Each structure stands twice: as structure tokens, then as C-alpha cells.
Image (cartoon, rainbow, N blue to C red):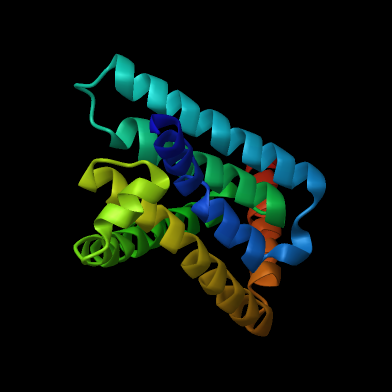
Length: 182
């Protein structure tokens, strides 16, 4: 069962990726999607290994900072813009993921305290209450992220956010080249 929990924790690292891919789905290609997914899996796997090797180091160094870096880099590749423009977006999405995860964790805790936890434990083979809460929170979070991504896509199309980011990225490139040439 620990393999299922490990897979769920690795999946939860890709929620920012899923949100951005749904939000800017017109720009997603197979190549970007495969590379992004591979980077998220590698980052989360290395975070798991590193947190086991160095338990005294704060988890933010292994779990939060690397996934924000991967999200920033790949979203800038997705939209053909500068990474510095996408860094606040990646940080916001990470915070949003953690907020939604906390809300889902509270709901999962309330669901697991009902009269049916024994049936749930028997059905999925989990014996610890924390394992059940993690399992339920990860599963319940996926549809919420998909719905939020679809709502974000509608809003991003209305305000032409991708065009704004690309335009500002190009003007930043021009300013950088002008500074280099002068």
C-alpha cells in the first residue's frame, strides 16, 4: 500500500502542471506535455529520495522549490515567454494547490470519521487514518483542480492572458538585447 501512497504524492506534484495545461490548452503540444510530465516525475522521485536521505533538511527544499522551478521553466516554454514572468504564476499555483489540498484534507478527515471507515479500510487496504486521509484528499483534489483549470481557461481566453505574457516577454527580450548592444 505504500506504493499507492507514493504514487499519490507524486501525482499531487503535477497539479500545477495539470492546471496550466488545461488553462493554456491551445499551446500544449505532445512534446511539451511529455517533457513536462517527465520532469515532474523525476523531480518528485528525487524529492522522495532526498527527503529519505536527509531527513533533517526542511521539506521545502526537496518538494516545493524544485516543483516551482520546473513549473516556471516549462510554463515559460509553453507560452514562449520569459521565466521571470511565469515565476509569480507558478508560486501562486503552488499556494493554490496547497490551499485546495488543505481544504480537501479537512473534508477527507470529516468523511473518514463517519460510521463507514471500516468499509473504506477494507476496500482499499489502508489501516492508518492518516493514510486514508491522504488517499481521500488526493483523489478528491483531482476533479477540483480540473474544474478550476477549465474555469481559468475560460477567463484566460476572455482576457487574452497568453498574448499579454508573450508580448511582455518579447519586449523584455528587446530591452535585454538593447542593453547588451549599448
